[in-house]
Length: 345
Image (cartoon, rainbow, N blue to C red; front, top):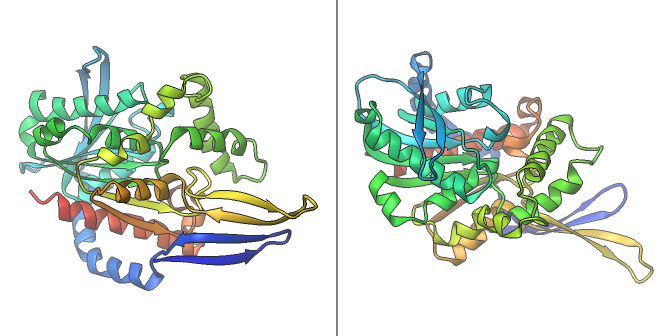
């Protein structure tokens, strides 16, 4: 179901067109209560999670580094590629992946890994992750730790490795990929970069949001993802290019009011005198657009939108704002339920 509404600002009204319906706080709380005992029980092992670092040679003859997290308790487990879209500006042992990678490894009782690809937001990033799976599952000394069932959890700019990788039936079958979750991922790089080019200079952006936008902008300019200079590369590096061909079940999650990865398009409306009378908002960008593309292509897709900025909200708002708290908890619970169901060994 969708909803249309009008919001009055101090200057001009904003009209929402077909805003996707989000789940109520009560429903999110109910799901959390169901899953909480299992999650908390598994999190008791969080201190037992260990990391290992690997190097492998990719199909492009490049030396690539990856880090893996998990509890080595003698059981063969699922393997999940977890890309949080920040490899372009961090070491693999950055706090963001250490925390999230450990939590996913614990709650889903699996091993997680992230690749330090030199090709973030490009098509080749997908093959680097495919090669990472191949290395761990078939060539590494730790290959007996895995049970042959795999999946992806990707966030923000980390979407292309999943969408670009899971169009290959041969790869999916060989590595046992069952499903993937994509959180707050843009659909087309051209749209995202056009937004970022303007938004990163917006003085009204929250400092945390502005930092991420600056990071995206500088990276896209430096590494040739500028669509004006290399439009073909921007198309190949867009999840929306590959989404119609993804061959495994996909969960899409986003915060509809995200200010980093946009999921809506604002169109100003003027009267005959040229004065602004309203702003029409259409939810046809980012993850909303990916859902539309995959649905129309007959893909197996589940869409779970939430209000607020979700994972891109300023961290202090995660606990001060009920809407942001619901969105963040909801994203985690939906990811946990979806991956647990589809990655049963």
